[in-house]
Length: 138
Image (cartoon, rainbow, N blue to C red; front, top):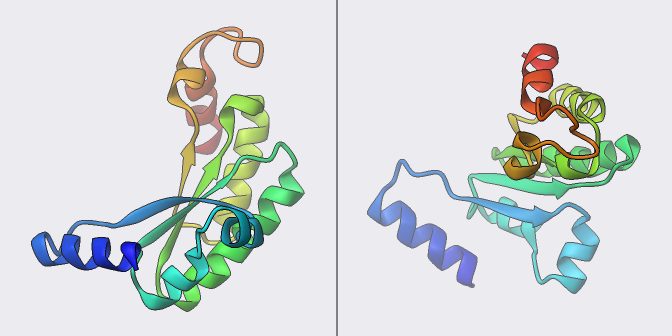
């Protein structure tokens, strides 16, 4: 399997590197339509970190997807960095999702995408998205 070979080769070359994968957050869709069997990859220990792209605007859907990921990853003694679709939501919603990810024991989060958070737009009129996240989440 390709993921296993990559993991093994990376660890052989540089054992301290972290091997991660950004994956579709809906595990069933990821497996049946995207050929991403990330739950198995975690169970096999061929990922150190899984980064589910839970880009839903709906916090309940986000919570469910991150819960599946953390339950699977922690059972395999692996980590989760929750992917948040910042480009689709106002900063208040991103902060809510950060708090949900923390409550579910995700070890980190990723805001996608940097370009959106750094430039003025309809959801980010003053271009201060990251500053609002910093003030409220840290």
